[in-house]
Image (tube, rainbow, N blue to C red; front, top):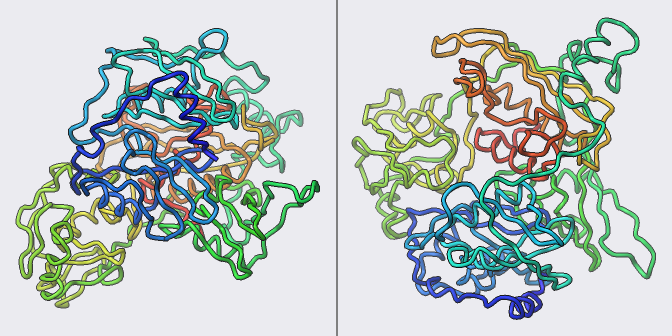
Length: 604
């Protein structure tokens, strides 16, 4: 339970909550896009694309509703009119289970004022005998929230299995002392804003100080000294065989762990039947996983999109069970380029939607001005009228469109194809085709705008559903190898071993004809379910040439492969040192992969 009454009582004793009088005065339009998130017991998770569009519609209403029923009928939002203040909560209609809801920071709402923060870098500290800094992840989160417009009055977070609420971020311009409330104990601590970067103590442990230590052991083993540091199977990364095909269904098992005991006796974990596993994996891999899935035996699974994070729940006989996904550990292997490159196969518009008839196009205006407007060029869609020299304005990029280019001119050049209502393999419409096209996700655009859009990115501009592969600019020749070593990563408690991944790029010439120097970066993943999943996604990204790009290195000043999907290059040091522990790395790198067209749906 979030215990809002206890929070209010603690806050009343320690802090006069400011009134948020501008909530219903802020004007929202469909040209300004925001992303709503809910707390999934470990971190904030974004709602699905359909829910996001529903919320954007509700935010345009004046006055805004206090209670909102979600389209699935299973949840409702309480205090939706106080969303900006941080008081909004999602409530399960059956179980009454509550979760906090927020706007993903940083954000700037129309007409809202930012807090008058001090110039320069600053961080937050809490009082615990003496003043202590929050972790780097929390620092980043709090700074984003403080720089949002308006800053929230309440900020919920959890650390060390303890739930907290930070009160008063909206008052930082008048007071640099705010308060933190423990929602279980009601204990209140002071929190202050301090100029300068935070200072963290260095961890003390016995892991290698740099990757060169492991490399030296590996080299010794390869030379046959007999005393080198060998991987679990004894094979070294440079001798790794070519990887066989990966099958997610064959590799995965799902277990249910009870939250409570029965009559004082602990309940044993349950292994789900293979049929149920296949149903859950099929839904989990979909572009928009449902929040609730009913199994054949009548049991219900909620929050399926969080299955890999351990936050999905099974409701069985009135008891809540936590679901755990387990994967078989990978064998040592490699991916060799260019032999295993995935090439751009183009997009056939006929296979991902349909051309609208003039009658269909005329009917768009009945659905409202937003439905009749192309979100790419921001002009209306009318029968037999194609866009002329349309401009892709910045409003289109507000939908989290990865890699979108603002002010990108869309030419009105004629297409060349043979049929009257078809498209070639590259997605080009035939001459005389309808000027308006609707994707199978339900969103409608000018045909020519969509053709140009698909030359850069193969996803819907509104809901981000993928339509085809995204191919990057990574060097065409290279090698990815991986092997397992018998040491844990610092701060990762559920993995006793480490997956070492190594990339090798020889010097060469890029697609643009520009020479680049070689690079051999090394990274680390935990030998657990999240690490296994990331390894498989990295393989896909590597084959599609989106794992790396080509650019000028800020450190070396040379043209070389640069990280497009960030990897952990150290076993320790935390997020600031590109190492572990970093509890948000899994979700963060999933976002990077998705922005480059790689998702769980790509796993076979």
